[in-house]
Every structure is written in structure tokens, then in C-alpha cells.
Length: 142
Ligand code: AMP
Image 1: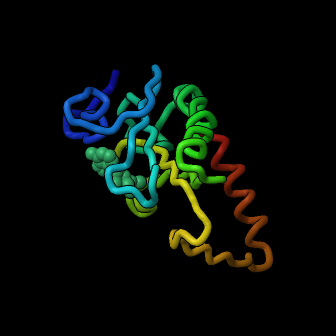
Image 2: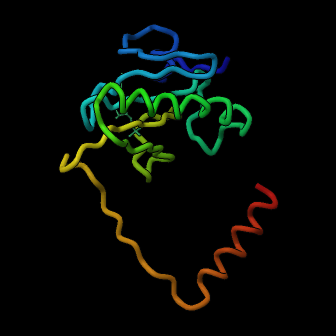
């Protein structure tokens, strides 16, 4: 199993450093985020070291994410919330700080002061068709 001795999440997986672990299966491990965005914020990380989600083999990722609905139900049951944000920061420019794939499950409460800028825009004439064609082309060889 691929691990990195430098990686903080690999070191949690191999029990070299402590974490508040709440769930484990063959593919991954879930523990409390040490600096929670809200009470009950958890991280679910694959045991194997992949820096980015876009680098993971699809079959491994699909087995890994199977646990997410159950973890989501646990988040709501334990925190008494009705919803949570499921978030992956994939790449430093997207806010990824720890270079080991991880899903955040962040319980949300009304008026909790969290939130994010969602400055939705509009495409100029022709841009959506251009982009869709570029994506279709890229997906043939990626
Ligand atoms: P990201 O910005 O998506 O890379 O988020 C990394 C998250 O990992 C942050 O929310 C940190 O609070 C959390 N984190 C970093 N080190 C630890 C640790 N040793 N135990 C638990 N959570 C951690």
C-alpha cells in the first residue's frame, strides 16, 4: 500500500500520530478535523497516498466513496444537523493544504457564519458550446 513518511494523513493511517478516529474500512479512515470549521467536522481519507483526487484510479475511488452516504448520515445523527457540505479541495489553488486526498464533511447549521462566495456568472455568446466541445475532446484522451 502506497504511503508517504512525510505525509500527515499517511502517518495518521499508520497510527504514528494520534487522531480522533471514528470510522475505518479497507479503503479509508475517518477522523475529526483538528481545526474544525464547525462542531463535528470530519475528514475521510483513503489509506493509499494520492496527492490529488484527479490522480486516483477510478475503481479505487469508487470503492472509497461508498462509505460517504453512511458517514453523512452519521454526521447528521451525531451533530443534530439537517445537512453538511461535502468538500474536496483538489489542488493548492483550490485551497488544498494537505497533499493527500481527503473529503471534508462539514455539518451546517442555520446562521452558522460559514458559507462561501458563489459569484455565479454568465457565458458570453458561443463560449458554452466552445467549452463543451473542448471538454468532449479532452475526455477522449484523459
Ligand atoms: P485542506 O485545506 O482541504 O487540505 O484541508 C486540510 C485539513 O486537514 C484542514 O481542515 C486541517 O485542519 C486538517 N488537518 C491537518 N492536520 C490534521 C491532523 N493532524 N489531524 C486532523 N486534521 C488535520
